[in-house]
Image 1 (tube, one colour):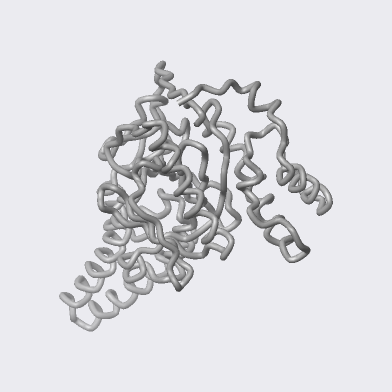
Image 2: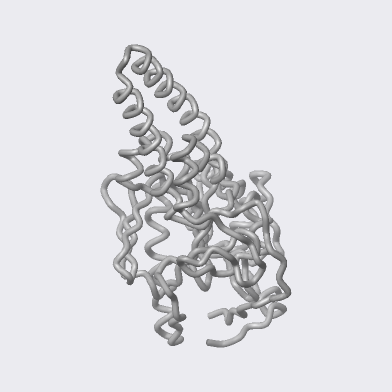
Length: 319
C-alpha cells in the first residue's frame, strides 16, 4: 500500500464526471463540503437528467447529517466512496418485536470508504444513533441483490446480514463498489486481523471494541452487557429498551406491560392466582428475550465513562 499525503489528495485534478457532479449539485441548490474526502464520481453513480434530482437531494442531505460523525470516524487519507440507508432484517425480531418496530430500531446507515464498511444505527432521517460496526472488505465472502429488493451479505465467519429498504441505484452500485474494493485489497495484500468479520465500534471514539468486551480500551466508554439489559426488562418491561434509547418501542412496551398487569390482577381477583402470575411471567419473559436478541447485535453505551490516558490510533494508507 502506498501512503498518499493529505495535501496530494486536495490538489488532485477533478475528472470530467466529478466537475459535472459538483455543477449539477450547485444548479439544484445542494451543498456539500468541497474539502471533505468525498469520491463524488462513486457517491453519485447516476446524476444526469431531471429525474435524478430527488436522489441527489436525499443523498446530499444524508451526507450533511453524517459529516459531524465522519469528521471523527474517518482515518487519515480515508475517502468516502458511498453512503446509503437501509433496514437490517431479522426473523427473530420479526417474531418477538414485530415488523413495524423491527424496521424502526434496525435503521442502518452504510458508509463505504476506501478502507472499510462502517454500519451505524440511525433514526428515520439518517442521523447516527450510537451503535456501530465495521467490516473490512476482506471479510466479505459474497454480496447479492435479491428479487425482493434486499441485499444479502455473507461474511467470512459464516454470518449473514440481510438488509432491505435500499433504492434501486443503491442495490446496483454497492455490489460493484464492494467488488472493486475487494480487488484493491488483494492487489495490495491487505488483510487486517479481526476477531470477527463484523466488529463493534465504540460510539465515542470509533475504536474497535472486541466481542464480549464491554469497555473501550481507547477512551474508557462503558457498554451494557446484553444480560444486564435483559434482566432489567424482566423486572420491568421496557426498561432495557429505554437504556438502549429505543424510546418509541419502550413506550409501546410500557402500555403492553400495563395491559398484562391488568389482566393478571383481574385473574387473581377471580381467584386464579396461578394464571395471574403466569401472565406476568410470560409478558415479562417475552420482553426480556426480545431485549436480549436486540442487545446481542451491538454495543449499547452506558451513561458513565471511565477516564483513560490511552490514545491508540490506526493510520490508514489509502489504496
